[in-house]
Length: 145
Figure 1: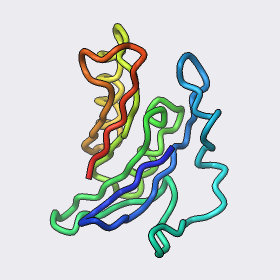
Figure 2: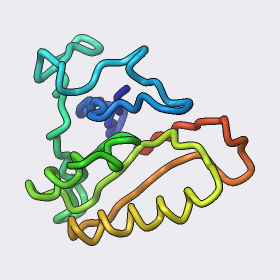
Figure 3: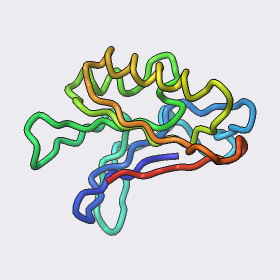
């Protein structure tokens, strides 16, 4: 699993998922490899080299001081979220593209988790997940650009 960060139709970087869950309905490791197994710091995409890694930062071109860091779903729940390291290196806005399902009590826990990570990193935090009314077995991924 990965996130492609785009700006004006151009791919700025690819961020792979660090932590792959292997419990309940989440068995990412059946189909994906964790970031730690990558062999390269870039990939060729659409005929050009694109940065690849969990340590990529994306400075905004039109907002002073806005530097985006990206992690994926389970990464926030891991022992050392990539966003912690990204914030340490200057990220001021962190984004998590998630496919987290909606179960009883999970929304409150997730809100606390995101709030605590935002406070700990002294950064804004954007989190996407499954929406209200979706089945507890549905997972939804949302992209931001």
